[in-house]
Amino acid sequence: MDKTVKRAARAPKRSRRRESPAELRARARKIVARLERAYPDARCALNHTNALELLVATILSAQCTDARVNMVTPHLFAKYQSAAAYAAADPKVFEQEIQSTGFFRNKTKSIVGMAQALVERHGGQVPDTMEDLIRLPGVGRKTANVVLGSWFGKNEGVVVDTHVHRISRLLRLTRQDTPEKIERDLMQLLPRDKWTVFSHLLILHGRKVCIARRPKCEECVVSDLCPSSRV
Ligand code: SF4
Image (cartoon, rainbow, N blue to C red; front, side, top):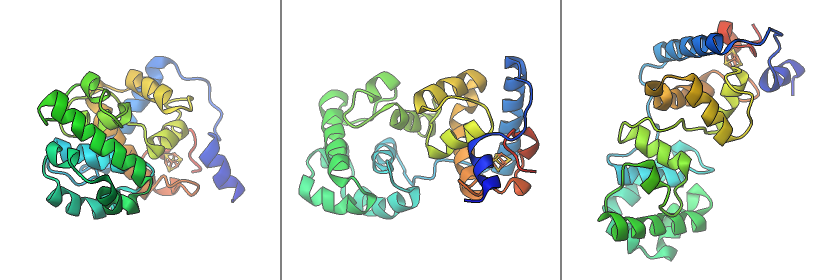
């Protein structure tokens, strides 16, 4: 790897005095505003038309690209139109149907188990609270955050995927290295009404500009606010 790129990807190159919490919050808000202007259509990239579809797509998206999930879900969503339908799915058939998303045995267990719990505990409906969602099999805080933020419009947390993890550190919005701790830092820094959109913005930015190992800092709208900028 090119040494300069390696340095930009791993550690900020500019030495600067440590920001005060107020300065850090102000910089974070500016970053959000710039990215919102750059990506006005930022939204969840997983295709869905209801909460159940989003929940299924999010479980499928673990260790898999959204584009791959979007190739698999049209068939699933046409065939399984309710929690009861997923709950009654033949696991062997379902495994084949989602095989290309990887980890298909575990994902099948999660989706069928999650659907059975929806039928047994929630009348087949997807609940709209963190507490109920994370009690469903195969549903962790990250999946719950996606559904709460992108379907129910509730900002309960920040989804920390691989892009959010990497770019939040490059931007020095956090020095933590686990999704749970990064989420906690971001929740403290960002206004609550930006928690959901912030993830969508960083995911788009990570795909288009701040690409892992070859960030296009010269094209980046937040390069002057980024301690890792190479320009
Ligand atoms: S300036 Fe932009 S592209 Fe470069 S490391 Fe920072 S966020 Fe990524």
